Length: 509
Image (cartoon, rainbow, N blue to C red; front, top):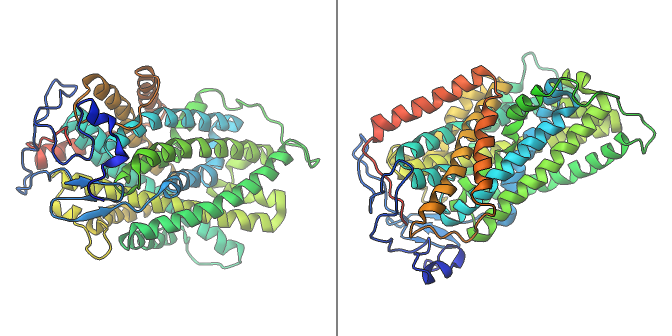
């Protein structure tokens, strides 16, 4: 198995390019980064702990990534699992947490906010798919940027991605706590304090422990959850759409589409963009994906298309049932009351179950992705080497999972849904913009090692548009979220200068 390179791409060898899984990288420099600096033929430099970046894996196959110390990160997630990570992560917040908040900000035009988010996500998914088939390693956007634009931008993106996923995971766990608390209220169980935060913390511990037990466990959970979730949502939204169109004789609540104006459409798009982080999380666990040359592009693009349709239909159904003003008063569990209005208590219970499954799957996938970013940063000596240790029993980076799970629990305790969501969006949008720039840089440089088995269309216009849209959406966020996001990036850069300022990562494989 170790002699099968990723994607089985023979064309790269015929035109003089080494395939991505080659054990002998070219001895020449791989061109220049955007600063005009040529990457070294080998990794150089040390962090303050005296650790150097680890060599590239000695073999990358369709089944595993094997490093020189014979530790093996197994590829155990297939196309179904990849789609489940993408869809499961995205469909949670967009369907079950955001409709009430989004409708309060933008009115019925919140559907357009979700559509804008979907277009931007798709513009980024295409270059991310190309980069992922050329560099199918754990770390996703961090790995792409560090190998194309240099160590410093890569470090800022990598540390920002880790913390962005921490914010996103905390947001999903708080949403999960809201739905679990709603279940308790539905069955008549009254507690003296709000159970939202304690329940979010509990599920954070459970999901982190499950991921340490193996990605097979995580993938099985994700596949089952997303399967049940899609069935419930398809039935509910089909009924709701017919009802909104007057098929069952009930009149929709009349309301102007741009009831709050045009600007709130874009600010709401910035808020709800957290709903679209799932496709990039597929790239973050690229080192776990089977047959990455085929499955990565299909999982990323497919998940964006599926969930965008669900989001738009959800906002249409919800605002038709109640109107944006009333919907906004129902908070994070607004969809439960929409279902109650359509189908009574059975409908409310079904959506409560679906909301639990959705926020659970979002948190599950985000915790896994955050840990894989820590794993990749550690192997590049940007974090202590211990963080990339593989558990010999389960084949998972257990220290990296704990490094992700700990900060997540701290943020869950804050309970501030909108700030958590926007900071996560900010950090991801910066990375998405740089991913689009990275594919343009690599196409123009055409280094010997760059041989993707999937090449996106529309170069360079589409990735340039994706970069502009990603950076532009940041301008519509609340000032507090922008300040926190810039603070995270600044601390990330200072950490890099202090801890690993002499480390230079090679751009060859």
